[in-house]
Image (cartoon, rainbow, N blue to C red):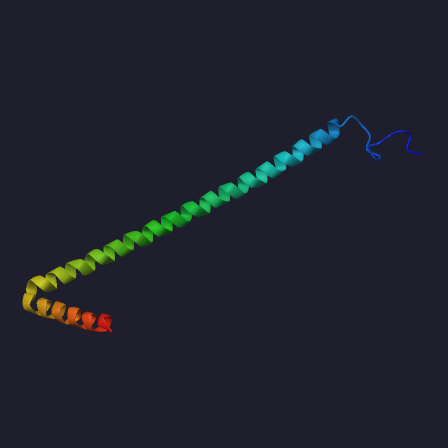
Length: 96
């Protein structure tokens, strides 16, 4: 029946099984490396997009700051009046 063979029908020295296992392992390594590479590419692309958005925000902020500075220099009394009004409204809103 079993003739003393305890490996449930698997015969051979195991060399073929080892080579097949190594081949599968290499395939898995290649797939994982591909996933890591794609992840790095996507992260790099995302980083570039974030840097672009940051640069645009800084640029727009600088433009707004320049405009506010020009307005304050041209109209110092209006600027003080506006600042006082905004401060008063803020105080009234946060006091409650």
